[in-house]
Length: 127
Image (cartoon, rainbow, N blue to C red; front, side, top):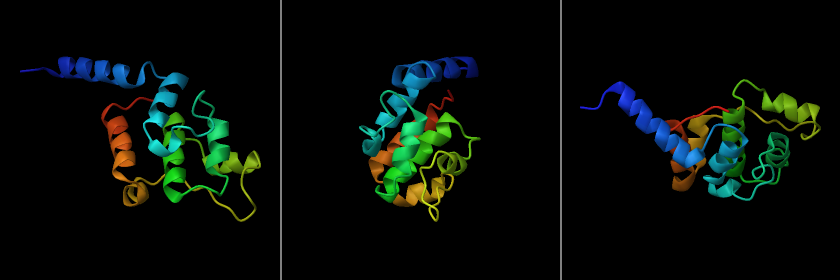
């Protein structure tokens, strides 16, 4: 029987294989697991401000915006990204950029996006 320490060690090894060390490189690798973010601005190299600007542009699909919100929430879950987008002038006066909502995303995303989020949930890291 495998003990908790061994399970933790195995999970850590899997996480490192998939995402590498937590940080900007891991954020790029995570974002690229979402098909709609693979070539998005701010993904490679990682730049949260560029990704936020792209996500707040108002020209993306709902699923793309949700994927970007997910990635931004992983980067910094305590940041009010709507406030940041407003301060940086990324939002129009009547535009909002609400926090990521998992239930909304599960209702919108295709199976590939759901799989990307589930993989992170199984191997989660915070930069």
